[in-house]
Amino acid sequence: MLEELVKLDTELFIHLNSLGTSAWDGFWMFYTTKFNWIPFYIILAYLMYKRLNTKMFVLTLLVIALLITFTDQVTNLFKKVIVLRLRPCHNPEIEGLYRLVKSSCGGKYGYFSGHASNSMAIAVFTSLMLKSKYKYLPYLLIIWAMVMGYSRIYIGVHYPLDVLSGMFFGGFSGFLFYKLDMYLQSRFQLK
Image (cartoon, rainbow, N blue to C red; front, side, top):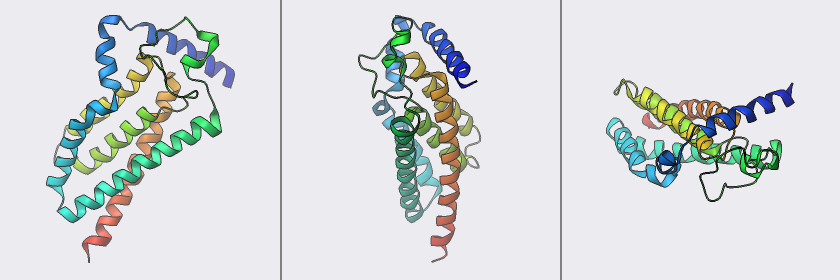
């Protein structure tokens, strides 16, 4: 059963990745680069700042830093210790069957995607934080995170299952850390 799932995942990866064209490569490389999203993160932080007082905003930033550290470290644990599934670009069985857009593909192992887990964690956390004030923001953030996940398939560095697993883990983590933030805000606001 697991072998069949891996086979289907590999076939889906090759299909989705082969849909790419050189005309779109620059867009997807820009989209998948974390550094390019710093202005976006600053805007999200500003929206949170407007919703919270300074003390609670600093607390929330600390929780977000913990969230990103948590998702990153758990992702690395799965990649390098638990699963050890080769990234497509390190898998000799599919060499030449897909497009590698990046000049380098990252570490040897890829299950599950850190980009997918981190972006979905931020999307869920921020959506829950701001949904009462910005009604459509959660939809935009979830779409942004899903497209981030797809970008990893497009450029040839993750299988679809890497991305889906990362998104589910990131969404769950975002929810848990939102609950932690709400708990901490209620504790510190009373003092």
